Amino acid sequence: MPIPEAAELVLDSLEMMQGGEIFVLKMKAFSLRQLVDVISAMDIFPGGFEIDVKGLVRAEKLHEDLITSDELDRLHEGGRHYIVAPPVGNWTAGEGVHPSELKEYNSSHAGRFSDEELTKHVRDCIEALGLD
Image (tube, rainbow, N blue to C red; front, side, top):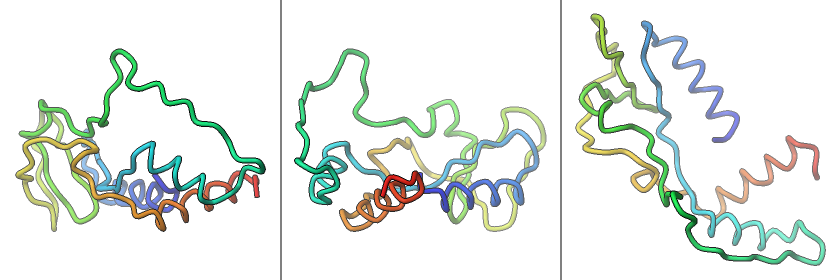
């Protein structure tokens, strides 16, 4: 998650929270293969690097679950995020928030980063870490 998006999620959550909610950013996803391809094309490692593909390891998942099946009946949708209402209490959806019709939500359902967007985020991370 890029730092500006993480900051927006925190600020939005502080503004909208009533207590006990879970806020999930509607963020884009990328595959590890796409990340490797982008980093390879950036030529940031002098001499390149080797890739050793192992395949899936036992108990490893292809996609990250972002909302569980137990949370779906309490799921609401706002502009930039999903909100899971607390399981107890009298939570009410705020302005611009409505019940979601999602049947599941994991990283396979998220929008995808373009190579250009991912390259920019990698460059931003390198700069933020002082590795440039």
